[in-house]
Image 1 (tube, rainbow, N blue to C red):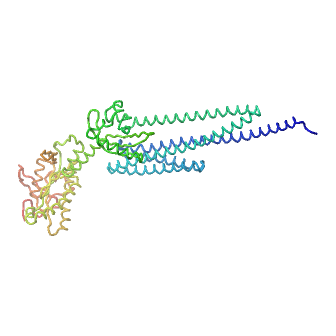
Image 2 (cartoon, one colour):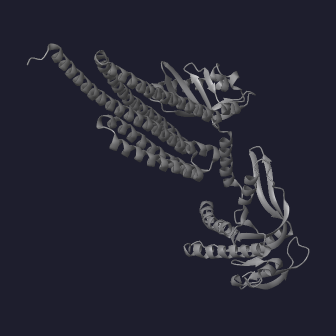
Image 3 (cartoon, one colour):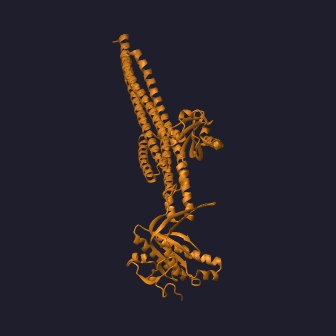
Length: 583
């Protein structure tokens, strides 16, 4: 039985409709799955981009204490903050690297992992350089610290560059995914139009699916808008950081015209921003330093052609009121499109320079001024309280026995070397006991001992004297051809103690001394002491108590003293002769 052609046609049409429907369902399902997968992957890359932004923020937080230490001078605190953020950074970095290796195809993962590795290595190098910077500050090496800071700035700039490269790689991946989405949508539309010519229901299904697709695309647009909003927020945060930075940040173009001037720079130079923006940066420097500015910009331009690393230099700035002051300027180059700009980080280093000058002054004082005077001047260098005051002290006079005879026997050069050798050891003994050397003469010196406990400084003075005697014996054992003997006088009580400043044509000279009866008696006791003797006055003998036994030798009428004085000798230093006797 022959089937009618319309039936065959109906079968063919039915078969065609069935095939069309099945093919439509198959291709639609396949393309939708592919599109969903692409969208999911794109969302994953958006999340990674946010994580990389957080990683960059951690790197910035780790870099902040390195600069903050120059303002706070809290080396240990800032070092601890840096290491905390570095640990957070490297932990986050390890997590991100593992995630990329596990979830990203090799074709896309290679460039991303290379960027992450470069960032990790650079941040580790920054951490190592920062440790050396902090170590330099601990050892009071500001120049080394500044060199390390400059190196760190260059490394940090490299890190920012690699982060930008990382974001670019992510954008390339997202663009590829977006292209896949576009291809999928285009292919789907082609099939939908073909099927729509055959089946109205399929057209209706395509319209429903198109609405779903439109909603999804709308969500993507919203996501992109949120991403751009995040970028604007990041820019606002960067601007807030610049505006609240303690260092002055100035941006100029290649001609030296100021583009931006943050509040810290306003505070440093005294100009409001609206008075300097648009003007030449030379207005911030003394006229005599304009050539240095030109050299610095030229150097930065040359450097900017090869890299974006910063250069630093100490210059002189000029405030609005005409005051000239020292500044440290770090200049970095950046290029926006075809234009080149320079960012200068300016620090007022007046206090640092003052501190350096004070260290130089202290170094000079160390050569000429006793320790007591140095302590007083260091406490208040601008107006030191150095007036003489009545204080309870112990005064020690030491003389070389038979110095006149030695000066006749020995050539001056030999005698000078001999005395310097002995006196160097004696001065160590005095300073170790806390005494201050007032003056040294050719054959002796005077030392002053002070303590809130009056008995304590008397005991300390005797201990120093005994140490000198022991040192003399040790030196004589190595110097049997030219041995020396010393004798000392020691007295305790109230004296006028303080510093005297002598002004001369070649500058000022400070001396530290004690004057009065106590000092006179100590000097007289030394003048009558025999070689190897330590004579002490009655007040010192009383303060020693049983700590160091003393023996009364005689009662003497000493020069320039109205009354006779009991003279005592430290028992361990008793001589076979009484004061004034000769052998």
